[in-house]
Every structure is written in C-alpha cells, then in structure tokens.
Image 1 (tube, helix red, strand yellow):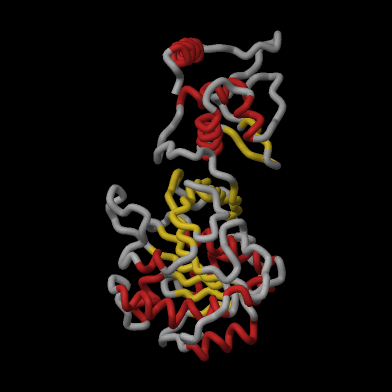
Image 2 (cartoon, one colour; image 1 turned 60 degrees about the vertical axis):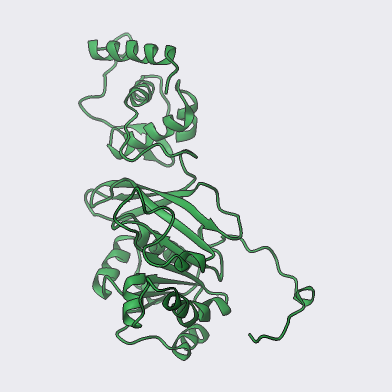
Length: 345
C-alpha cells in the first residue's frame, strides 16, 4: 500500500464480514483475548482451532509459553487425533519472525486462523516492549499485518493487570494493543476449571469494530473434564445474563426452587431454558442457579437436558408419590415466600 489516493467507490463489492469462526472470530480480523491466568483464553483459542481443523482447514499456533509437549497433551485431552494434530501448524520459535517466513507458511498451507500464545513472549523474542506505543505498532506491522493482508484471522492471547478494580477493558501494556485490534474479548472466570471438574468462563465484548458480537457479553465458555478420563469437552453458548451477576455468587433460594422442581417425581428432563421458565423467579438468575447446580454436580446436563443426580441428598418419593419434605425444606419454602413478597432478587 502506498500514499497514492484510492477511490473507495471503485473497490470491488464483497459480502458482509461476520464472525464466522466459532461465532467469535472474523476471517482476516485481528483479535485480542485478554484475561488473568487460567481464565480459559488458551482453551478458547484451541477449541476454535480444533473446530476449524475438523472443517478441513489448517491453523497455526505460535507458542511462546507452554512448549510442544504441554500443547500436544492439552490438545489430546480436548480430543485431537493424530490426523488432526497433523493439520495443526505448531511453531515454538527461538528466533524473530520475518515477513518472508510468515508469507511462506501462508502460501504453502493457507491457514485460516493463527493463535499467538502469548503476547509477552512474542514481544520479548522480537526485542520489543509492549508498554511502548512504537513497539506495539512495530509488532502489528511485522507479525499481524502479513496475516491480515492475506485474510488470515489472528488471536493474540494477552494478560491483564493484577488489580481487577482498575484494569478496565485493556490488556496489560500500551493501549495501542487494543486500539490496533479489530476485536478485543475479555475472559473472566465464573467457576474455576480443573481436572475432573466443570468450569464456566464469561467472555466480555470490550471492542468489536464490525459490530456483530453481542454486548456486553459475547458468550460463555463451559469446560468439562471427565472425572475418570480427564477428557475435555467444551461449549460456547449465549451468555446467561446481560448484566454482571458477580463472581462466585450462589443464588441459594433459586437453587432450592430448581432442585425442588427437578427432584419432583413427575419431572421430565427439559432444557436449561425450559426449566428456568418453569420456576418462580427472575429468569437470568434462574439460569445462573441451574448452571451452578450443574457445576456442583447436583444436576447433570445430558443431551442438552437437565437431569437429576443420584445422590443421598435427593428426596425419595413416598409410597403415595409425594416427595418427603424435611423441616429445612419447609423453612426454605417460608424464606422463598417471604423473599418474593419483599420483591425477590
């Protein structure tokens, strides 16, 4: 591109660009995924990458953090086969990138998505300081622009400042990291994820130049690790609520109402949405209550339907078909009724 003026009216027509890569990523767009450690950024990028591989595409991972063994093991836990790993272009560079080297990869393999994991290592390898605006611009021109020019989407994983109250909607370092991006998504842990556990991550829309992503939250990412095999499954879904319900908040009254409905002998498994519609209370908090019960393994989600867990604390029906009701249950009912009269949540 030169300084010669371009007549925009003469540009060829093209279809609207939408986030067609997993509903979060625009083809050819420059994306920043930021969040504190273990907030699901890498899992999200790998999940999007595996989905693209399973559609027959190549993707590229430039790894400056985990190393090849950890990257391979995580991808295998996420279900990647050897054939799928063969379509993943993995680099763990020790020397700075060149425009020619990047162009050669693009021209030979035609990847649709590139993940840079993570910004700090990539900047350090290239002798750049991500706190300096000029260095951030140099990184964008040298590393991101060759992909953008060839319509390859990039995801740069980045960290945030330690203070959650003051970090705002920015990645750590110069504000030009976000200013030069087309999309900036912030990752926030709602329920921590680990081996044999289910976690939930809120994905916030901090910036979206093309305007197709929902606001204020783009999606939620649920990660489930099988207790026995540790195989990892995931699901991107619409966010439970448009407003921030708070980290670690347990809507206990609503959880009791949901359990009472699901443990009733006449209950037939239904979707999260249908279950929330059938219980008294504000819908967005009911959905959060259902998710909390699933994470705590008091309920299960099977084939997108909520089913009860078989455990000792599930009330057993009496001979006449009624559920036994303890004193604590009656107390909860009284509290629920009082809560509703006072205006609910």
